[in-house]
Image (cartoon, rainbow, N blue to C red; front, side):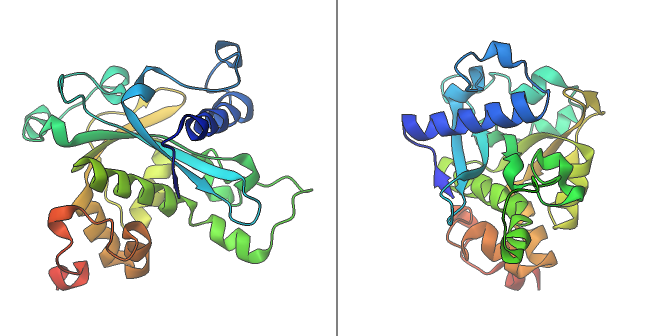
Length: 241
């Protein structure tokens, strides 16, 4: 997990996104990005992570967390522009300064391994001329958790308690099976395919994962190091009884 905090690393983020969203999948028009780097207006208010394959040094995946603007917390997130948000009364109780959007959740085609992970834009099959050990194939199934772990770390570092996410239903089902209980907050919308507007509280995410599999919780939090500051004083299994 590599924080993209330099211009060079951010360019790696944008190049990977261009490869996934413009070349491997027809989500964005390549002609709109003549420099072969996909970016948008929300990147200036985002923090980014890359996942690097240790053996090859290649970047396998990336995600970002779109942060609230401290001087303009009412500024809309992409999910609010591209979908209909319901449960407005509940959302009024969520401090926008502690609300972010998990976005651009993607994995390079080279690391796509499992047919049931198409929603990752990343795991629906590897080119036959690529050589991967069985261990690496098993490890690729953890990319979903690793990307979520990036979001958890970014949340701990930026005082974020809630995530918005505009998710494919298949991705929502997968993360639910991992113990990550995103709540639906509006109807399906056709935005680069069907997407479900969702919301989750980060500490509820961690508690849900701990119930499901404590090894997953350890991965998401780096054995508790990246838990939210006011919630890491006790192991989640102890809190859950």
